[in-house]
Length: 195
Ligand code: HEC
Image (cartoon, rainbow, N blue to C red):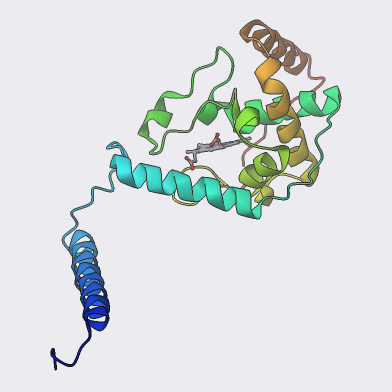
């Protein structure tokens, strides 16, 4: 049989064989990793660097492929203000803000939510909207379209677009103003009565 194979055919068979063996070994390793519980899924232990890179890369490519790139890019200051209120209510505990730390329990999330001060430099408005609306699988980032209106989602994008230009001092002033407004009962969430 071997005598009848040309050198070329022999090379092709060897390469295909090598790939098949490598594939089988990889499949056995993956099955063993799952079956024997070798991979640590505890949230207080970071992902292996290779796994972290793979998951993050997958997320970036997926968002870029799915996001609507012609989403609005111009926002009013009213939308930014509304987005700030949304952010304070739903996001700041995980993502922090200018001069505001993330909540302590967020240390227990893997991956840890990033600060979003420069998110608008890394993502287009359409991509930000997609991430906020649909969330990110296997991370703590929720899909917000279930609870927030389209208008709320737009205002969050408006706020993230403005965020690189909001200083620590300005953010503190915005917080103080919102607190004052709440105190006077003009604006902001009213206390909910639980039965
Ligand atoms: C329970 C925690 C949690 C809350 C609350 C949360 N996020 Fe996230 N968010 C995450 C995590 C974790 C990631 C990282 C996902 C990843 O690495 O793929 C993330 C990622 C993001 C990103 C992408 C950041 C980047 O540069 O890669 C944006 C934008 C974002 N969140 C916006 C928001 C907004 C806006 C809200 C509020 C409406 C919000 N998030 C609420 C946990 C949270």
